[in-house]
Image: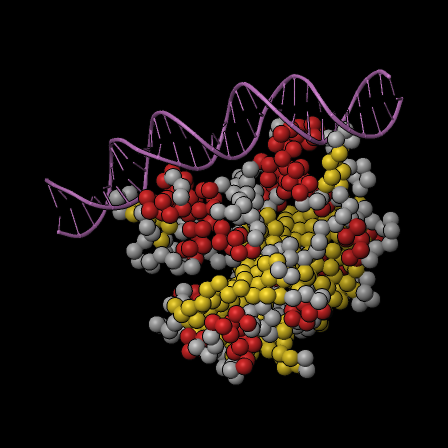
Amino acid sequence: MAVADLSKTRQIHLTLRDRIARGAFDRDGGLPGEQSLAAEFGVSRVTLRRALALLEEEGLIERRQGAGTFLSDRGKPQPIAVELADVMTHLVEMGRTTQVNLLEFDYRDPLPDVARALGLKPGERVQWSLRRRLIDGAPFSFLTTCVPEDIGRLYTRRDLARRPLLALLELNGLAADHATQDISAELATPEAAAALDVAIGAPLIAMTRVVHDASGRGIEYLRALYRPDRYTFRMALAREAGAAGVRWAPAAREMAGADA
Amino acid sequence: MAVADLSKTRQIHLTLRDRIARGAFDRDGGLPGEQSLAAEFGVSRVTLRRALALLEEEGLIERRQGAGTFLSDRGKPQPIAVELADVMTHLVEMGRTTQVNLLEFDYRDPLPDVARALGLKPGERVQWSLRRRLIDGAPFSFLTTCVPEDIGRLYTRRDLARRPLLALLELNGLAADHATQDISAELATPEAAAALDVAIGAPLIAMTRVVHDASGRGIEYLRALYRPDRYTFRMALAREAGAAGVRWAPAAREMAGADA
DNA sequence: TTCAATTGTCCACATTATAAGACAAGTGGC
DNA sequence: GCCACTTGTCTTATAATGTGGACAATTGAA
């Protein structure tokens, strides 16, 4: 099975979950017997059963003694697909409430990466914060932000616990003008796992965003981790005929300050 | 340490890697001794040393007997940050070559999800393919595509091994008009791990895209997995004052057919 | 009812990961 | 050279995980 960081139980768990998602099993009939599956994967029946137990916990399968193992029809709850459109509107539409926990708030020296991204002068410090955002009481994002200190002095700890960061900047006459955003994937560290209530090593969506004002000055550096089962990036793209060829012009818009 | 799917060695590996990235250690001095780190994490020195060995393999640290453990200055190679702009142009600019392995190619019944997304009639089949894309000989994406059968008959297996799917459709007079795209994160299954040459359980960027023609008909369903260390989604956003508030209008564009 | 096939449960054992400690070998300041 | 401190290596013990087999309980069809 190539290199593995996971126990056999977890590997088989992942493989079977993938097969279910791909529709590799009869929609009606059910799964092969534990004997044959164990033989196929080359593991003991005990190990295979542990993998099935994980799938059962997830609600993907149902097991009936004497009968067999069957696909569960009740589908899993879908993550909130956040149109890069306007996040705030979307959440409100769904009648959901988001809540914020401000975990840390102070002023410190920025990392070289952050200093470069924000275009800080040597020695310039940042307002640093660590937050967690919940939806219906369930955590879905874990946010780290850095703001140049002089800007960061415009709001207080209490302000940040109540309002989105970009909204606070807006109130102080600082308008975001453009930004660059990167999306990647990472494993949950023990810290992130605790904050987002997932297992250590669970997959997370990782986003980094650098926001600039009209003059090009960096005003916010955001690093966010999202639970993929509760949050997804969605974007609509529209074709656009251009000189250099066919392109996709994103039809999506994102409202400022929604999650930062 | 909360619930964990990972061994202690791997947990500490992730934690230390995160700390290094956050600049928690002296830039010059180096890391604390193995004794104190083992004590801090509440593990034996053997386990801690295994975690350090992983970091050393990654090139993040250097260990010198008698002296200590130090941060390695040589930075890791950055992933290709793919501006949602135009992927093709980007890759060409960098003087890189991409190559495709066509792993599977056939016609089959689509999954309910796919049939719904493409708006297929009951019983309608799809052209199904599994591909792997490499950059400079190194795999970075693993692609599954579904195309309605009548459209899928317009090209052959050989065609698909040579050209991007949307380019093939274009050649046959089928123009992509708009699309919806979702980005999430997943763990590598044994299959995906083998194709992308990563460890089982490694984090992957998961993208799903549904492409429609001008009439609104679904012409391609794409599901892609990317190695985050070699590929990243990047998008530029520009502020746009609107009636409903401040919005971000994506300044990014993506060229059609770049990776599909 | 009978019977083959299924899942549920238990046990003894092997393999692997981790723990705790001892000691060797190398480094750098004194 | 001396010495405190570091990483490298080894041994032994314990815990976690996986193996192989046996048997019970349940199901559904013949």
